[in-house]
Length: 328
Image (cartoon, helix red, strand yellow):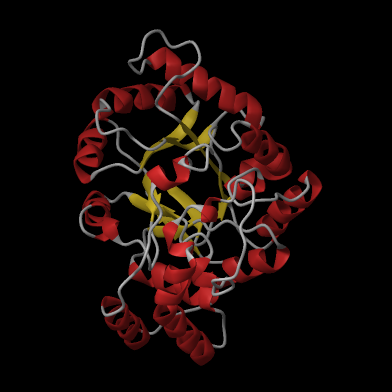
């Protein structure tokens, strides 16, 4: 496994998104199997594990805490607080005590006395990010967290918060199918030396090439409402999958690995955190760190991607229709 820096945190080039062990993609593995897969990821060199209070909610933190306990001091553990309706918070306005209560509850569920990287989850447009940044600075001084970050924030919010307490990372959706953050957010992160953590780097699995127009999604599987998985859009997006298969055949790897290798080549401060609930996916996704694209291959991919229109997307509004927690 190769590693890269998110400011002062050294993390595996590919991390593990743990949400899917508890909800969001249909039937979940048994607890014992989920823990085994997290242990396997660690054995393969992954030291970057992502969870949040919203996943489940709460039960994912409990699961991850139990899984990583044997090697807690050897990994970078991420969690997040949702900046609304926090326990013990008085009134509707976000308060320091409300965030502290959320943090303490996450620490208890994770069976740890510190979180390496703590995000404000899906930063609202009206968030007082400078005030939150000040609180995060205090939690860092107290040793409750080592670093902090934002999820789904704007370039302006990043700059304002960073000026108060430096951000270590920004986490947002990013993949070959969702590139909006290349316009302002990723350049801002580069300018300020902030890491960028990509959730859903395989576009909820679409870029693996393992799904077709006849695939059925059940229960709380968000792909039931994500428009890129509609039969007509699966067909319309076939040129992108054809491109991935072409490069995968050249490199002797899989389409998913090409997708992740492209992202890793893009910038050295970008870290994808794909979900992976089967052993073959763990080995495949983490193995992408060893797939190196030449400059010529990367440029050819970029040029081809610029000429392939993307049909459908993944929006909070669509996911809300499913009745699940809106989480990344």
